Length: 73
Image 1 (cartoon, rainbow, N blue to C red):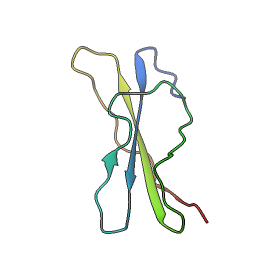
Image 2: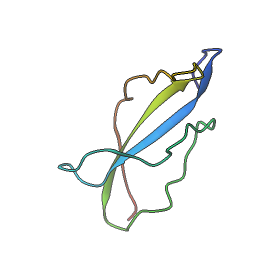
Image 3: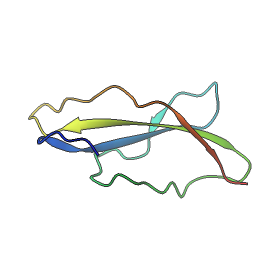
Image 4: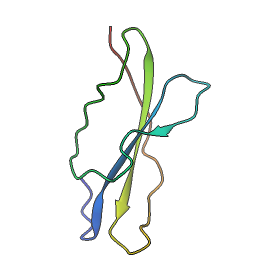
């Protein structure tokens, strides 16, 4: 979790393949520091990144985290 007092939450993005763009899985910021992606298929490698969003009237968004790859066997 980020230490910022004005942290509104996090947006989780997923790419379905190396040549595919990232798309948001959480259109609104979530406050949790964990996320379960229930829309995955077995044997497909997914890449995830996360950005933080603050609570300013015109919300500021951080850059993306380092990517994390996962695959459901």
